Structure formats: C-alpha cells, structure tokens
Amino acid sequence: MAELLVVIVILAFLCVFYLPKYPQVDFKDYRFMNDYLHTQSVAMSSKERIEMENDTIAPFPISFSKTGNVNQAQTITGELFQIIIHLGNGYLTYEN
Image (cartoon, rainbow, N blue to C red; front, side, top):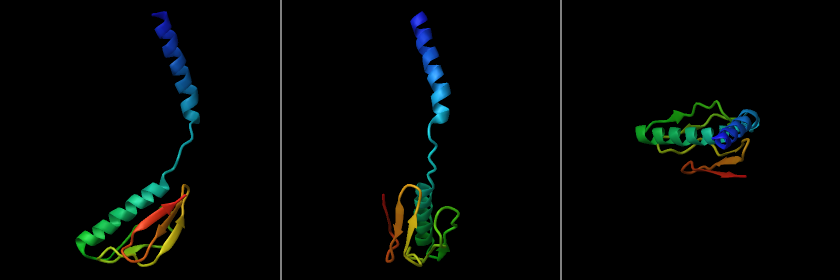
C-alpha cells in the first residue's frame, strides 16, 4: 500500500510541475483551413457567392463563387506551415 501511495505522490508531483510548462501550441493554421473548407462548402451548397469571415491569418479577404472558386490565389504564411490557395476549383495545399 505504501508503494502505491509513493507512486501516486510522484505522479502528482510531475503533473503539478511539468504540465504548466508544456508548450501551448496555437492552431490558427488548422483553424483557418477548417474555416476555409467550411465556407467553400457552404457557398457550393447554397449556390451563392460568400465571403469568408477572416479573423485568422489570411492577409486578404477570401470570397467564393457559387461553384466554390476563389477570387484570387494566395500564399499565406502561418505559424506551422505555408498555406497555398490555388485558382480554379479553389483547393488548398500546405507546405512545411
């Protein structure tokens, strides 16, 4: 029983002192890609032009036509990688 108590105390000690120092990662890049794909799918399903509400990392407003095409190609440099928005059908890719 004493061994179990010692193990629990050691684990509690590690949690108290290690977890607050664990680096916090901001996932703005992933959030942007999710918002982008969601807005594009809404534009295609509603068959109307929609502008993406952009409060994340894109320097220019992004609008989608009723077929999901974007208004301009862009390369957006995020914290984790570069996001490349292609003209045509509006697909995006990312690079490290």
